[in-house]
Amino acid sequence: MKRKLMAAAIGVTAAFAAPLAFTSEELNFDAYRQMLADGNPAELFEMEGEELWVTARGPKNATLEQCDLGLGPGVVEGAAAQLPRYFADTGKVQDLESRLMHCMETLQGIPSGEIIGGKFRQGERGKLASLVAYVVTHSKGKPIAVDVSHPKMQDMYAMGEKVFFYRTGAMDFSCASCHGEDGKRIRATHLPNITTNKGAAEGWTSWPAYRVSNSQFWTFQHRLWDCFRQQRTAEPVFASDVTIALSVFLAAKSNGYEAQWPGVKR
Amino acid sequence: MASPMRIRAASKDGVTEVRVLMSHPMETGQRKNAAGEVIPAHFITELTAKHNDKVVLSAEFGPSVSTNPYLAFKFNGGAKGDKMVVTWVDNKGESRTDEVQIS
Image (cartoon, rainbow over all chains, first blue to last red; front, side, top):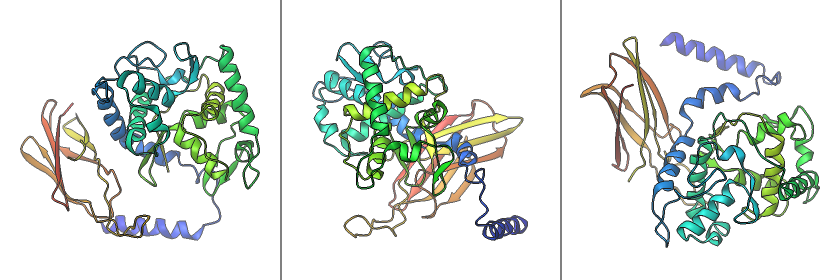
């Protein structure tokens, strides 16, 4: 025991002795992520989502088991990896959140307005996040396969690309200001270069994720909302076209990369 | 009621590895909310792990343990199909017990 304490004390001293000599490897969060991979608390949200999926709820007292996420009613396995996609029944491109919201409204009678007007991690929007955790976990390890052949998907991709490079807000920032070059970081957080496929995939395949620092599970909508907030610009409406367009842009660039869902972040 | 734990227990070469993910806010009692009021302390104080009916681990938890704690440990013994039961009790007297079969 004493020996262990000594070793720990030496470790601390060494860390203090070289505070400025961080290499990018030391800033890397991957080792920590690997340690947590077995006990990613996103699982707790996944468990809740799994239960919500089969629980009869809402004014129509129905489950979500007939929800079509693009691979047929009730198919969850691999569904998240092919989203966002164009849905003929709604005539819209939808991401996972907006599609689940559609299912909750049509099958269960839970009004979408309640989720759009709600707050993250609370009420129906919080339940939606747990459902997201459940669905994405069933695409873990699957390659991203987003089909952009439909004209509406192409429109969304083009809009997403435009938004990505669009400078706005008090600081005149675009997404590309932080995510347009290799080797950038904010404090110790490495920023992927989203203009490349690899960089886009780094973002897309690791969110939704559990954030260790605040013990919260964040969906991709939540993540994007925070990007806008950090950009000091108007906050996007939940599941609005602009957020879906950015998701299409990121997802399409990530095609072929393996989904790591649900992720775990610092 | 408290949310379920996720427990995994696997036996290999006479040693069983148990991994437990608990769902708990683990409030320290030192934080304040947006209105400046202290958020009351709410954390797990005791944890007991039993192999069948025998206690193999008992631990005292406190406010320095993170939200949604993760605990992994090994013990000698345990075979496939045996029962692994984990119980925690928090400072509000709430408790949760979950069990799993060793795989």
